[in-house]
Length: 481
Image 1 (tube, one colour):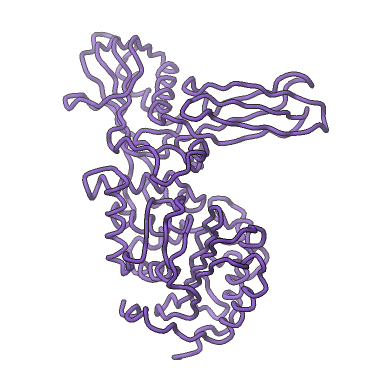
Image 2 (cartoon, helix red, strand yellow; image 1 turned 90 degrees about the vertical axis):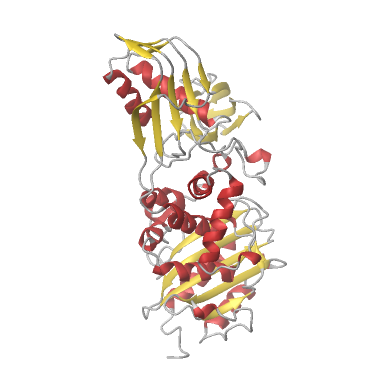
């Protein structure tokens, strides 16, 4: 990677009209008044820098930090890595009665769905267990008990993107927003009645207080869904007109392990298995008997919902999993150290990077745009790179698990189906970084980070215009050819 030698020296000269076009785009973007701009563009074939502006300035990357997390996870864990969930029992079984406890041990799987708990419960039924004289115990000790990254804003804790992190957790659907439930509101039978509120999946772990009202068709629609801080109580208020469309919102739970355990207990009831004891948390004894194991999809497949949909919880779980596997401790402290070491091995200057979490939600994360393009260049030689590239959102492709967060952007341009890039958005921050192929077939790496803007309108359009301009180039790398 000798191409990076001396990158603290004077920036490479702009090639052709690329620099002029970028300057024109930026100059005609009033939303950037008073904002910070970091842009780094380099050849994907040689690593040569094509254009840069503020590329050495440390800026907040938002979810572009996931580019680092994904690369570190693939390097540390491997693309075939799976997360397992284990079912143990203690005591003795006499006939249909188990005189002992049942332990559900989570090892970080963020993709557990209700049907997976059904399968685990079915393994008990196969052993002809109908009654358990003992407790149902959830074991989330694979990771530490710190649920939130250090800079997460408390008001984000109820949001799906700020969900608590646990080694034992569950997801409501195949978006795999782990540690959340879906609250679905539909109009009541007639005006004046309460709206119908459902939980998906249905669980007694979360309590819903319904303070809604159905109003006449054409009336005002305003529905608020809020989980009381530090509780598992969700209050739904507001109005919804007759015959209106349903409202759906993903709300995090406070205790993911308790949530998962409630779903498993529900699955056991469906199998006709009754539990006499309590439902609680604890650690699995070393002499417990393993009776069933559920395996997640491999990391190469998990990367798709993680990166396409920019799943924060997946990022934080991967950080803790790296810490557990490579450092012996499933914590942010150890996991971030492991990730940082991997980035250093890939050529990044970690002295200029502040990595406080895996998702990019922290406003304290900082990285220069040039370090992002360094990474995207270096990883192309990795055996796992095809899985990484496949997980990036593709501009203008409507399928959510292909286009992801770029599915509505750059449609009808030469960048559609071409640009593969990770988006990033938090307050005052927008980023886009990835790969694009020019008309001539030259592959280019780019990173665009915009910080400290006040007006959000038009910000992503600036990034899109730059990406489209790169895709339209007939001859980009004129020098040295």
